[in-house]
Amino acid sequence: MTAPFASLAAFRALLAAAPGPDPAAREAARARDAQLTKPPGALGRIEEVAIWLAGWQGTARPVIAAPRIVIFAGNHGVTAQGVSAFPAEVTAQMVQNFAAGGAAINQLARAAGASLSVIPLDLDRPTADFTAGPAMADAECLAALHAGWEAAGQGADLLVPGEMGIGNTTSAAALCLALFGGQAADWTGRGTGVDAAGLARKAAAVTAGVARHAPLSDPLALLAALGGREIAAMAGAIAGARARRVPVILDGFIATAAAAVLARAVPGTLDHCLAGHLSAEGGHARLLAALGLRPLLDLGLRLGEGSGAALAIPVVRAAAACHSGMATFAEAGVSDA
Image (cartoon, rainbow, N blue to C red; front, side, top):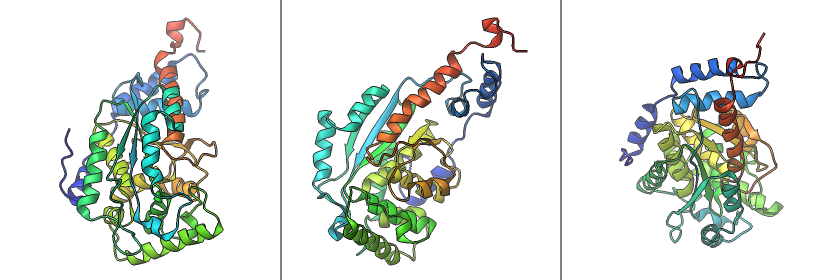
């Protein structure tokens, strides 16, 4: 399914026309849940997840058989402002580490039974420093959206978009400030572990970037002006999954910032998404609250790579397994009175 958009406006129109969940399947799943051999509501949020999943899969008995994690990698020109504790070349080095199977996400994907792929996006050509001008031209942003859209169409029945990119918490913070307002300090955290001076430089870069691009109000234009290729690609993957009715687990602050662009562009476009976890990165709790998302897990992570969402895959698989595999009272010969 090739990405059917050639402009940001066409991408927005596609979002607006995206399909919703199957209401009949959702109601059939709700009716089945009421007949399973357990007290009503005994599995708590697991029951909600199963019914949500049923609506997007279009069946009263959902199954997760092919979860997929896709990591997009990009480099950021704003690192020239001294916003990261690590140099930009670490992005390419970590891509090599992913390919060799040596990163945390490799182990978590294996443990979750998920396939893993890594898509580097022009690592030799960082985005521009958004404090001095737009990070990406529209054509560059569209190319990244296309990369994400196409990656979402590889046969997964559950998708986790992840990222790697030195400097990308700065881009994510700038996007959140531009989209939701407040102060730079509300959205800016320590990322890779910058010291107090580095945090101050980071907040200053966020403030300067948002001020420079303040005339822009369109979320997709802000994505081009303040984002990164990997952030745009995650937005494209989330949108591509919605078009295919594939449910998505969101990772931490950066992935959720990518999702927030879509939510602000076309309200309701994150209905197929769950928040995998609450990150320890500054701004993530505030962002989840702004989007009305409740995280499945809270483990104090701030790694990125899709790691927190990968840990949530077994929770979603368990929800489907319980809902679809449990016997009803009638099947088990158990009294439901």
